[in-house]
Length: 282
Image (cartoon, rainbow, N blue to C red):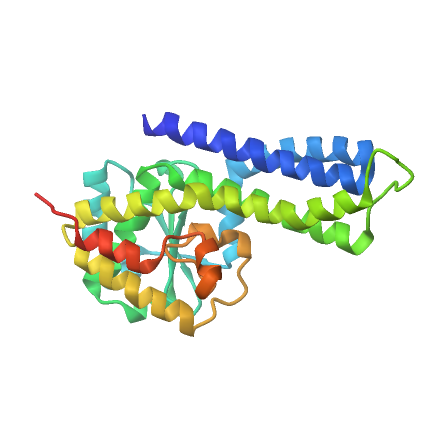
């Protein structure tokens, strides 16, 4: 059932993002640009599906590591994986002082959990296990395929937008294309692409929080971890990370306040903590 749900969400997301990519291609290069964008989107969808984990890890600059590096949690992580009926994922470590984590991979067999050095040093044992369980929940729920593919395509849309702004619209003699409309498309397309990500991202975060609490039996540990991560994000820059990857992390790595917080890839930390603390476990 989860595979079917993930497939439907992925199909909708791919269709929407691919359409945006093709529209931008049309306004950059007319019909030729559109045909190029169609072919490029097909290739991109294929590549992002099969290699999204490698692309995302490459974008993060993380290194592969052993679970033995995570403070004696290897057995606890293995037990949660066994309980969730998923293989132990590969571990990667990202060198940054910011406390954060993400998961990637197209299915549980290809699952990857990435922890920052900051989160390994700033959280206690139960908090860190709660965060890892949250990421394992994303793997179990097939969330990571959707987020990883979306991150790759949104990044491509942003790159295409930058290309258009640098080189302008091609074939301006084509009367069917209004330069003003093209400018509006280029400005709004990345925003629409991000909103498509947001719509799926927020709901999956709540579910992953609940799943982590269920398997660790310690919702308060994950709740306190989220508060600590929120504080770290606000005080410590993530470093050289592509904005399109924001939805992958347990907390958006880019600090936002006030109105901008409403457009974050993640629910407000306060709401996540409130939900976690209201969970009653058997």
